[in-house]
Image (cartoon, rainbow, N blue to C red):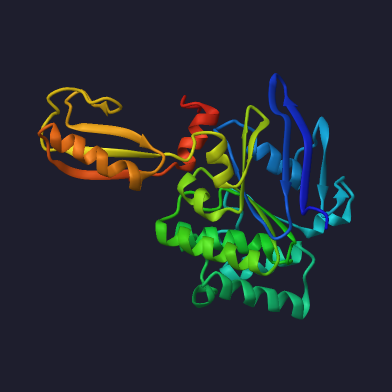
Length: 305
């Protein structure tokens, strides 16, 4: 079976800025792919190129096995959810859905069925007659997503769909996306919420300076970059009287750390060494590798704005 989306050697320059410089992305059918990168890495340009809003200077985009071009009917299988709220504030939720449904070519009973589905899917059925200008940010986000998928697209592009919403709204949005995936849709999602990306995505692609610098599952990226060892941190009741071999200490000596490949085997001897040095352990913290550590390892720690 062909991939849902395949981007090869995507290049795009805006004046002197090389926004994309050979980026490659493959989305398999039924997958939720997280597209990550620092600010200015090229994520949004790539999404816009797939959506048809940006024409690549070089490279190819295949959607459901067909090369995309301006007149290609396969684009009807694509759903697009922009980061900006693209709704009409003076219209009600139902009216917005009806308008966007018609934009997608729906009419009559098919439109009515999809509008009702969307209201149920977003939990907005009891607010469907209210102008959306009074909606919360989370409600607008949910409606924004619904307007992009009314036509049952097989591939959905979502640019920061959880940005600026509270934790409850984020959880509701992720539940909505999981239901889309279960119904057979393939999703590409950009986000800066790395804690969410670590647990929600089937696969992760990281781009920087317009290039794909890593791709794989979270476990695969960890193994290739920061490694699978855990950081063990001990907080002591008093500073160690002298350094102990293999332990990293803070300046005060009350916090010590090691990298442990096997916490169960290495922690008991460590605790015994600390006790023998005359100290008591007040707290033990074990930190597993995170997507944030992987991301910083690959892209650097400098802030880009």
